Image (tube, rainbow, N blue to C red; front, side, top):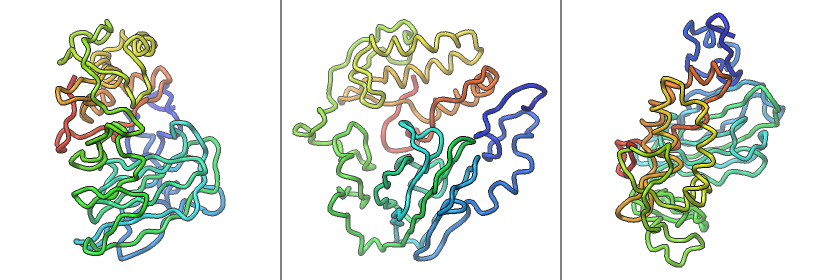
Length: 314
């Protein structure tokens, strides 16, 4: 409890971001992350969750920033991995970012007992984020990293080599998401297990999403597993209870951009920019906390408008 009566989820306490107006949620946090996160440099090393192999403590928010010499990239491999399982990995998770902070492009979010794939950064920096809530705990993880010279770098047998030098998992090819910086992993996908992302545009008919900066969308929505506009409308109906909030217009643009993404004239769709999500989060998270709702999106999974790949401002 903070601000004389507002309730905050425990996972938001001591997460480095003040959610209370009086900032009491970020006080007395030194004991919580004493052995958690920090800088890692040098040609190799390891990272473990707090107390590993014993169960990690509740309410953890740890960020490790790995940096190696210029002209090298970082390869990270997990030796042990066991976190509280969840379909969307919202409770306890490890998240990996291709850069020197948690705002960089996301490689993936992982939980449960299946080992994440080996991850190789595109440059000399890689960031590992570990979050644990107040619920179940497990034995955590142990990961090793090493610096690899760009001259010696080769992609593994189950990886695809992008022209930029990045290595991406073969299962990410033709999945509708650009994993190579130039999008080449989504080219020539006619014989893919996944259908080519070139379905025709259709006019938006969902009432909640009329009047956006665009009026054409395309389905199926593979990111959210939604087959058509009728199914999207059923899901969006649940958010109508929030329409009296002062921030609802900002939230509406984000929701529509996610559930009815803009159809691209080049084929496929364009997801909303990260700024659309962060703006809605800044305006609405306080109101949602008051209603005992947690913010439902991870804005870091969306593209930054400054990146080379296109994104949408609904």
